[in-house]
Structure formats: C-alpha cells, structure tokens
Length: 445
Image (cartoon, rainbow, N blue to C red; front, top):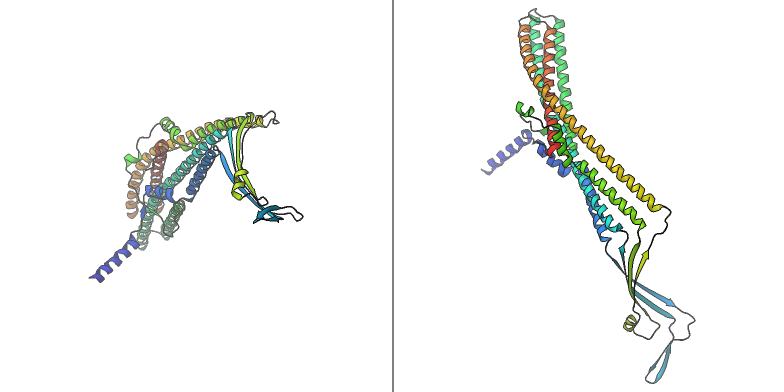
C-alpha cells in the first residue's frame, strides 16, 4: 500500500512539474518586487542612513564627557637627593633616579547656544529623513508602474500570439485547399505559391510574436529579481467590455488628488522647508557662540613619599568655565552663505512648480490615452466583427472559385489588422486607466 501511495505521489509531483507551472497575478508580481527588488532595497538603506544622521544630530545637542589617563616612566641620571626615612633608629636615604607618573582626568564640554545652529541641524536632518522615506515611496511607485506596464504588455502579447496562431491555422487550411484546387485544375501553381508564401509569412510572424513575448517576460523577471530559466507565465484576465469602457474620472479630480499623495510632490515641498532651515543655519554665523567647559583631574608621582591614595586625593584639581565667541567680521563668509541658501530656497520653489507641471502633463497623457483607446476599442470591435464576417464569406467564395487569391489574402490581412487593433486599444485602455487610478489613490489592480 505504501509503495502504491509513493508511486501516486511521484506521478502527481511529475504532473505538477510538467503541467502546473506557476502563473503570476499582477498583485503577486507587485508584492514580490517590493520584497526583492535590489534597487528598492538600496533606497531603503539610504533611508536608514538618514535616520542615523538624525539620531547623530540630536546627540550633538548634548554635553560631551571624555575620560583620559596618562602613565609615564622617567629617568634622572644625575639626581643626588632622594627620600630619607628612619627605621629602627637607623637613617636611610634612598635616591630614585627612575620614577613613574600617572595622571587622570575627566573633561566635559557643552555648547549652550550657537545661534540655534544645532537645533536647526536637527530639523534639517529630520527633513532629510523624510525626503529619504519619500524616495523609497517614489522608487516603489516607479517599480509598480513598470511592472504594470510590462504585465499589461505580456497580456496583450499573449493574446496576440493566439491571434497569430489562428492566422497560421487559417493559412495552412487555405494552402491545403489550394493544393486540392490545383489537382482538379481550378488553381494555378502561381496562386498556390502565394498561399504557401502567406503560410510561411504567418509562421514567421508567429515566431516573432512569441520571441517578443519572451523578451517582455524576461524583462519582468529581471525586475522581480527572478533568475531561473523558466518563462514567467501570468494569469490571463477576463476583461469585460464594461471594465474596458468604464467611466474615467475627470482630469482635474485626478490631478488634485495626486497633488496630495504623490511622493515627488511632497519631496519637492520638503525641499523648500529644508532650504528655509538652511537659511537659518547660515544666519547663525552672525550669532554669538556660548559654551561651557569643565574638568576634574588628579595625578601621582613615585618620587614622593606620600602614598598613592593620598596623592590622588591631594592632587585633585577641578575647573569650570564659560566662553563666549562674538563674530565681528568674517570676510563676508556668512553673508555669502545666507545668500546662497536663499537662492537654493528659490530654486526649490521652482522645482516644486516644475514637478507639479510634470505631474499634470503625465496625468493628462494617461487621461487622453484612456479616452482615445476606449473610443478605438469601440470602433475596432465593430471592425473585427465586420472583417470576420467578410473574411468568412470570402473563404466560402474562394472555395467555390468566385474569388481569387489576391482578394482572399487581402481579406485575411484586413481581419488580422482589425484584431490586432482591437487588442492594442483594449490593453492600452486598461493600462492607462490603471495608471489614472494609481495616481489618484495609489492603488493598482
């Protein structure tokens, strides 16, 4: 029984391996990229670095305390006097030419006020952290947009391959029908050669369509950081006409919402705030600096008869002080720094206006393409129905000898062109509508 179960398991595993290749949904692609894309991971590390800079700026506001010690050996070769002691009524004189010094100190320093430069530096680093976080979000958005574009293109190409396969099957049938007509004298060899050439052309078009599909699948895999050799298969979605032709929001409403949630716009606003803080930091060069210092130290020396503990206590030296530095003339250094910071602030405001303009143009492009491709889809759908009916009639007339090969091939080309136009307008409408929603509320589905 166990062997039977094992055999069934092997068969099932083999079947899944051969026929059950994973198919990716768009959301799975997005989630996988958010967790594995190397470019995004690097951006996240930059944000972590900015967080550490902020912590360092906050720590710089606190006093500093350092401890130090110095131990040294000395030698006085011509020293004649030394230490005299009396032991049991005997006078002993000891001359130490070698000696040992030790010193110990604690030093504290605190900048009490420097024109709020440290406080503003903290603000500047907080804004830098916010900018880094927005950079992560911006990188994430860019990757999501690329994945959506590639995914939609793969959907389109997958259907296009099916259309090319159908065209090839039709060409094969026409060629076979032509051979039969040639045998009964109803078709010339020249006409049959045209049918054969058409079949060969359709075979080439199918190979090219499949190769293009593989290229886009590879590009999507690279974006997801997948390195296996299998093509990335996607879940084919059944888009209804209502979904394709869904009402689109107004251009202004999408733009106004995007101004509130797009990271590139918020990043430009933060840049203006950062420039304003930089102006304040530059102005600190005109302000006095007030700092406090303090130290506590002691020392020992082996040349004295006093014990080490007594020396440590007796030689204690404590000091506290305050210093004030008032800038009088700095060769226009501060004024230049302030003016340059103000120029940077004006540039940041222009950058914001430019980002807003770019955002509006981008949304306008998506909006116009959505509307245009919806209209194209309506027209293409009617055209496919008409061309399909016309081609079916041509095939029947060709079979009866009422239409020649040129008319048949022209009808086939018209049908293929209509089908491809329908597919292209379908997926272009879907993609651009997805992008409008993404810019409006940050959601892709």
